Image (tube, rainbow, N blue to C red):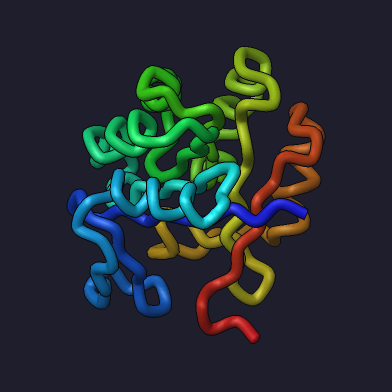
Length: 173
């Protein structure tokens, strides 16, 4: 089993959102690179980083913090949040992350997923945020009309072979 610590970044700092509410963020680290080093010291073998501002706005925002994390650790980093265009995904890989997580774009632009899987293969991961079985998008701020199981089936059809990260909201039992 692999346990992957998550670092959620909003406004350049590490936060936890209360039930996905961007207005109710608790800062738990002012220095994302220091938080990353902490997780490595605790035995982490990979980090899961989410650019929350990117997830909400649709384009990566916390690039400096991401670069600092990648430079601070010698373990693989995977990144999600705002990965909705070819350029955003290329820019994410340019920061040095090993894998990129596509969430909202998997619902809105399956063709992007196809192109990215063809180009990057298993370095692309599909993130499926679900509430009551339905896929949430845009950093949990919108609900889609697609069931999580249906999205996973569609992504497998376009070439994703088991690289899925399903997540549930903090209120899930």
